[in-house]
Length: 633
Image 1: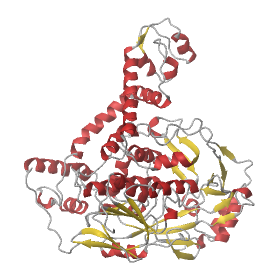
Image 2: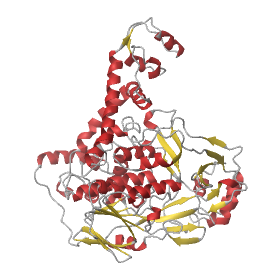
Image 3: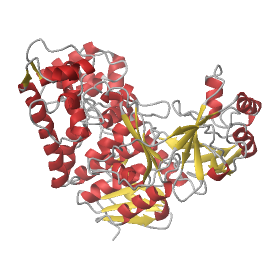
Image 4: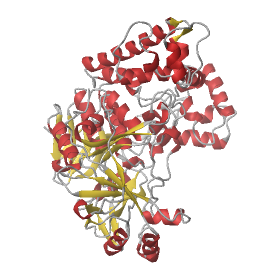
């Protein structure tokens, strides 16, 4: 009864994807959480997606994960960010109903075959001979498994700070995982401390929205999941509003810097660079006289609002004074104060690209324990860890995504190759090949993997195949269809301030003109097709950016060969002539699994990569290996 193929510790965004994947792949899986009622809890902002993050959600969905479907079912506002820019940087975002998102995920998890949810607290990992064998709980259970995935979020050694008040916990009202943190340290892992935070919650009935900037949902709405045909037209949606801090707000904060845990010396952990507290903003951007505050509703059946932009750890009475200095919030009632939170992080360089630890076989880490911030980054890691744990049990090849094919690949490669000295957040700027790795083609890139892994149904996968067949057919049709001068198309071109035709031209070449879109030229061949907006958008993009896409694909091919030159596990780089002592130390410490990963380790030179390539060509059969430890870990 207490023996499983995979055990997942935690039921947040990483834990959900980590548990659903092996269960759907046919493995007997357990999820250990303090309470079933907090499965899928949105600890901070009740929103999914954003710049760089929307791409992660689309990729989770294409691989058969749950986050995109949950967002579509519970969203109360949908927006596509950077919509006026190119497809490469467009990102979807939705405001979710916090309560409904949690209930949706809870129902999915509890109804999933092969998945058992156990309410308990993990106290110790069981490790024998350098491999995980299960865990023990505070409630006295011993659970056996050859794979364990830790997804503790902010609970690992979590400490909540409100002014000078410090409370152990992973979330308000929930205890921290201190004994598990000790067990991880006892296994030889370093545990660092990172810091994140959240703003106060406000009663929307006491907010004066008049005069604020109004922000409505997109129309039409683009769903996150390719498995969601559309968002129902009768879906109740809510707007967001934007106000700003004032000089008075800043005076209040400056006068109380000594009470801020970050600046009093109370917190020594590293904070989030890209989602700073309001105290951080005033310190780092002292020249700014005002900062945006986005007032975001938390749900349809609650009056609570999330004031995005004023995350803080100041004392509650200072937070109230600060809130009341912001236009529209003069009489706002604070439902709950904001807080800063420190939590344990294991350096991600301790992990393989599968998210299995290098020290302990069968032990995987996913989410904020790896130094990331955000639901989307956590969900992506959880899914990859869950897939790889299942493949390990099945004695199959691991699942590793490349930088050239996914945002998830970039995220995990950045973490495991470079590590992070501050909470890591995904951005489009981190992705080298973003012209071909876009939000709109995530299903094309990754659905085949999801289907092969057993996470996507044949019906869902076939829809993707049919979609891209239609795109390809239409591109070829436009290439083959030529229009002579002197037709009614000339008037369309004139209206678009485009040069008239002087000779026959293909619709393909015509669509390359920046001022021309597909709808302007469709039908001039005598046929009208009902392709749908997403197919049309990809047809346009592939044609208009053909040259750029081709060059980027050539760049991928140029470096792709070293990505597939595998380095034998346990390879000792001391045996390679010509490598400097410093590079040998770095390579032996990071244990890269391919030459591509070795190439991205800071300080490893191109000449060192060349030496390794030459060495591997000469010595294909036998390699020096590092001496195994006899410590039993």
